[in-house]
Image 1: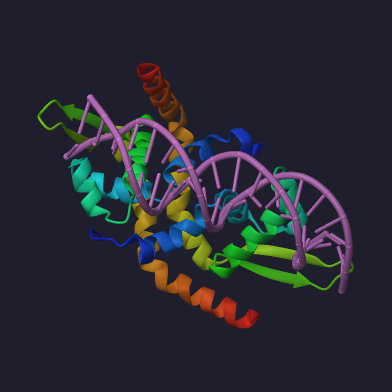
Image 2: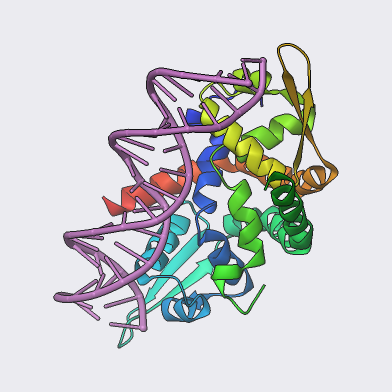
Length: 118
Length: 118
DNA sequence: CGGTATCCTGGCTGATACTG
DNA sequence: CAGTATCAGCCAGGATACCG
């Protein structure tokens, strides 16, 4: 645990990927149920198409999400959380809920800090 | 949680701060015991002095860390985790441990993905 | 519909030097 | 010892346009 060389720290190697701007948002959605590309786009309106593609690809690469193409016309693609993804999301969701519940406390701490600084 | 305007999403407002490159590393250290500035520096050798100062200040601002100055000569400063910090670290540490334990699985998923891409 | 391909910018980050 | 100040580079992320 200590003496960590951050360069090849296994924890960081995993965390950095899910710490992106959109990863947790998408994991949270896909934890509920599978979604298609366009659905995710509508669900997170302010993500750019480029970042949606890229983030999904990263999540897929790390094994959290599975991508299934249906050769319909027009083509449709479904993203679905894997077992590894679920096992990650279990502890992760607790942090997310902590963030939600303690947001007021954090905002208060910031306000207090900023005030005493001026 | 829903009603997704990511711009002022309370979850990300909290997460973004602890998702920084060094935050989790410092929280992990300070969860063990209080440390002085120089000690943290030696503990995380590849952090720059600038980023150590800045990250500690951010953690302090959000209420996770308390900073205590001892007017000795030369001055010494101690950083200590707050109760809010501990309450965050409890779920957070589970994610970190998950990352540690599942690093092999993630690496394997990446290898498999990269192979099938070429 | 579900992507790629480019171009571009703001902010994070590191390196270095100075200070109470 | 524990910072601040300043400059410079890089890259995540946004905007836009095009494609099977």
